[in-house]
Length: 427
Image (cartoon, rainbow, N blue to C red; front, side, top):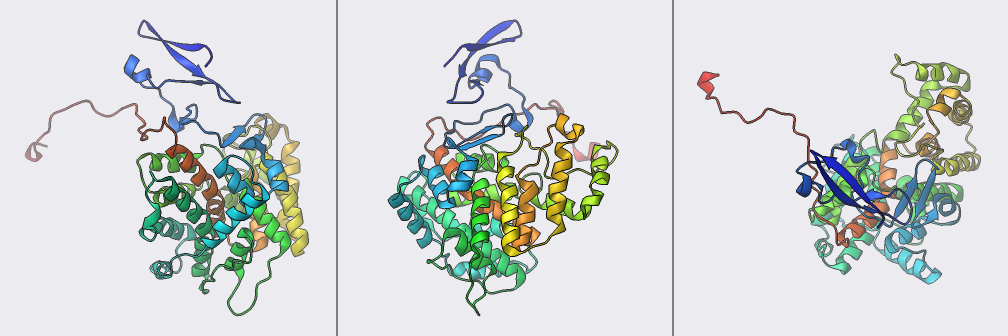
């Protein structure tokens, strides 16, 4: 604790403790604000409100810093694996070799889904969006795994966590296969988490599938870069749903539904579509001019971030990964050259520098995923796959938080004051 914060309201003064975390801004504890003053605070979007304590992820948007349990995202993406990062987020420390083997083995043994889920898929229209399928199927998991829905049992919470992390890639691959009319593939326990997902997504039963090491590495990095990102909209949704005591499968389905929003999980698809619209590097100045024109609705997608006011640390890793994937797949795509040139021009333009519109992770991820062969409607599904690890870790942290209460935001009411009912005949 540090000094108190003093609030003056209607001639009275009230003091509230100021709390300090291990790093980052101080927080004014206003839990007793309404009880003492009779007033609410007003914070649309909760952009100035700390809704919880968390030891998982720290972001310094001004400095372009992203830490998972204290480790910089760049170091994790370059040196770690997605399974290592998953273990780190769930347990607080990086695993030893034996711990990683045990954890990976546990996740691998949970990758199969109940056979009746195949019939569940067939209830969707063939042209259903994969995210619509993900919302429905993940939410339905609680109907298949009754033995891991008691949130007060630590053992059941652990089993549910492992099941979600393990089964999400299988469900995501099934959503893709269903949309293209191909048969589902069972998981292969001899492959890595990411390699297994690639095989289930792109392989067919008629022939063996060889995982491209460069693609596997790129996808593993993409999963790491999207694993968690503090209290964003979907994570807050998972926590809010979980605060009511909802089972973990329902909570993660709620997070998937929130992530589906174009302002959240659909940004990489929007960035890719923008690059396609631009077409070639020669047309970039025209579109930069349009972006500066207040009367033109065109926006440069993949630039700027709600939190980062500096270069997105994830974008640095993604730029390098794009080149590796393109070289490995021998892709000669003008989209990549357009992306590089657009970044170069934007970073040297006073308008973008002044407004701190730096490239974010979505600027490159769509280009990479497209080169690998994913259709654009799968982009948000991949985001959900990776973010499930963070959601599960955040949900577990919330359940064990002694300060946890059911979420109940208040409002500034602007409707009619009390009035008498008028009978229908008199209206």
